Length: 344
Image (cartoon, rainbow, N blue to C red):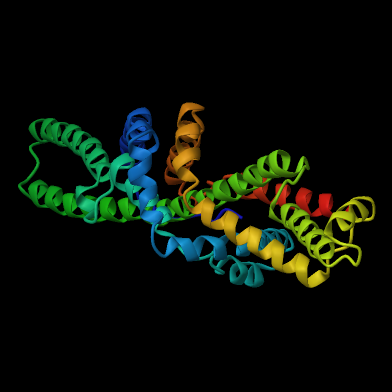
């Protein structure tokens, strides 16, 4: 549910219009940077610098995140349903549950977007949004001062107008700081959602890798680690039974080709877990392949433009972040398909 913010409540219409103009100029400038930004960070050699940080703890964090991702999406859907049922207390509790361990690749991607694309700095006063809005407010204030000077000349106002102008400038500066700070939680939420797309992309890559591996190695359709794990378990069980066949391994091979043995539940679990962990480790570096592909297919351009468009709309309307990419749900649909495939 969208939550409203009252940051603009005490701002005059003229100042609000100036703020909106400054924000629109800022976000339009961010959109113009998307082509050069994606080329620098998601095409080679930039893709290597973006993904090389996966060497390290990401090799452990990524498998855990991929295992946790289906449960996290289920919790998000439950929170959405609770929100529709006006159970906001339980909804807020579920929304506070983390989406997994923050990986170094996610943190690096969020940082380069925040700094190089959005132009944010540790000091908000040096951020580009602050500068654009400050410029528009300065123009508006300058126009007001010119009008005030004309009125003074016409009406012979007292020197108290200078004091009132200084007090007005102080109030204007305080309001500007409050308005600029309103973008921080919106940006944070949006970038958290963007970070989730990195895990979802790795999960989708897992599905594609397992499908290709199953088709090439086993001539089977295996859309996921579970399906591939079951096939590996079946082949392992067949190999074990063939080696211990009473009439020898040669005849055992022919026999179990006709009557394949059923793998035990423990073997299926072990093989599936091993396959999933292997795919997860491979997925840690999947960005080396998927980032250039998404760059040349312009998926990165589309996703970042959508991110900035939502940031602009949410800032002007003073709403909470509405940027909710669908990548994680696509990955979960593939998981469901993989599970159904193994059952039938």
